[in-house]
Image 1 (tube, one colour):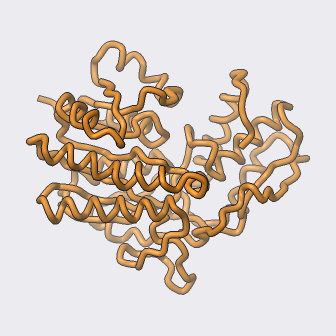
Image 2: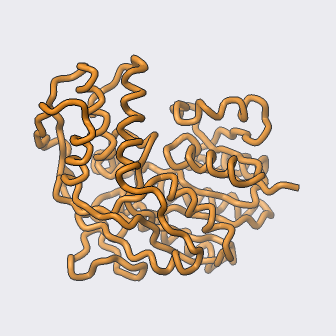
Length: 336
């Protein structure tokens, strides 16, 4: 009998790409967790699998509603759980800190409680974030797993809680829970509240004459290590299948580093327009920024053999082409 998995945050960028990867590389039955009002555009291409009930079933639940999570776990009976759902926008967390903390910390605890009392023993992946490390001095780069946490946003604080809750359930209750701190990862379907995606979206809108040739930015000096979302989901699959170790925690990230400004310059070079003006927008600046995000991934690569495969250039091209396709489809967009 084929294994089954449950993906929280199924309709997000990572959740939808993980579903794609598992459909292609496993025979697992996939259960997707989503809220009643989720945007389904990232999973439109999966409708045949969903409608026919072949390999994908959907379950409506909310991390803040324990009863709905208990029902989803009982229905799905997963062998593997990928906990990707979160309030995941760092800048938004400054405006809604309590919602961010509630969803990401207590929501994770709710999910793990539902699993703990289900009578099942799945392998659980809890997705924290590289943002837990926050403001790291340059001399302490690259960042290894045991670097002290110094979160720089309510989102980052919530992910510290997520990270610790996951490890606690492994240690206290003997559950096979593993935690990852994924560094910057992007590609098609990336939400437009993230820097590289809003840049690509603005370029696509400018190319189609939908907005003036002015591209608005936040902090361009932040140093990031970039990876492709399709490499990220391949790493998550390996995480739960290659000798899963209860309580383990790993940094995962790409191998190419540059500043946000350098990334923007690369996107501009891919544009069909050469008259785009770059303008700093104070509304896009965070009060505090995690400005040096360069990982040491030795622990994870040694354990699984994973290496990033998709180059930065392809990731940026695919991201820009994704937004070009969406803009040309005639959709109406807020510029954010």
